Length: 563
Image (cartoon, rainbow, N blue to C red):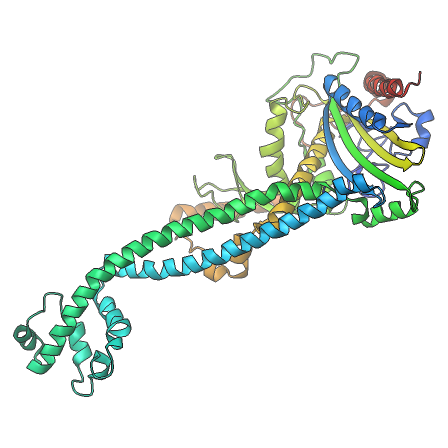
């Protein structure tokens, strides 16, 4: 898993999503209610947080975990694993070999695969060099560049006939002999006509005709050789290029599995936890495993929503509003962009073509209309998250405004003692009622973690450097060599570009006064979501959350044999 902290729910201090409480300015802009510090000792004062522990024979605790996640699935929750790590003492030989040693084996396989890929790249470069060389020769033949072919014959063929016999050694006697040879045609094969045509002596004409016959024969044979060699090299180039791509594809599963086998001691916090762990005793075979999962589904209040809410478009209220975009996603200090700064990278969007462009442009390459300046976050939300939402995938529903959101931390540990093996498991459950715009932020965070994982794999196999393709990095380093020459602007392009500059100033001034986007019905209260904490949020939303929380609580207690 990736080494990034989770964008957690907070009490308003630090990095995270602030919990909403009564009289807070953000009430109505979004709903986010639940434990604000996830201190499990407060569960007696809140029906949204609990901590349950069970110790039993080996295998029982793990079975509880699987029973829980499968039960959540049957209750129409979408369940996603967010993070996991494991730590095993070397004295637990069997388990250690299955996990830590297998990771070392994966590491060796990855190194071997990268070495093979590097060797394939070296072979590819050699083949490509020869292919370029023969490609230039093929171009000479296709363009019928006789002057260059005769120069090649003089430089690389005739010069090896020896001193006194090559054209290079004859200018002492006939100063213009090389120039005269260049002026000949393939049909100049008779001595007297050549002497008359070039106005040279019969002796020089004899040499020129002899060399010309050699050139004509060489050219015919050489063309056949070059054709065969070019075809062979072209096939080798394709094979080598494909093998490099295949090596990278073959490596992805190994790198993926290697990264997912995350040891607790790989991070500073994990090492500190292992160092202070009371269960990790010297000489005792132990292991610890921590898993964090998210579970969510749409929240249907006990009171049916009134009919005055009119659905416009795909959503009742669009979940991607300007408040969460500017404050919870793109804010460089308090938003997701603090840990994922590439979310704020520029993208250019054509509203007519419905297409995003990564490279800077003022006009759409297709329709030549002005483009809007947007961000990577906008692109990910619009092209990856919202389509799934509209299709009602992953327990998302565009007809619902609120969601039940559960964070479940599972801490599993085991020990092998002389009296037998025991396994201990602790479930820490945190329940939240959130509005759909906060649900979108969590979905974007989940997508960011997936993209970071893919980026790590691409960096290992040499496809990307950071968030950029290798070719884009090279183009930035040497723009004059790799940049394409721009097409000349016509009058329309120039006018549209000036129009774009004019409207960009208006856009910048209006963005400073940006308020939460109001789509659909306008409520006579701040924001678009519930603000009545005492009469509505607690009775109609938290009441449902409490029922789902109690269901999970009772299920786990039942599995533990507790009434």
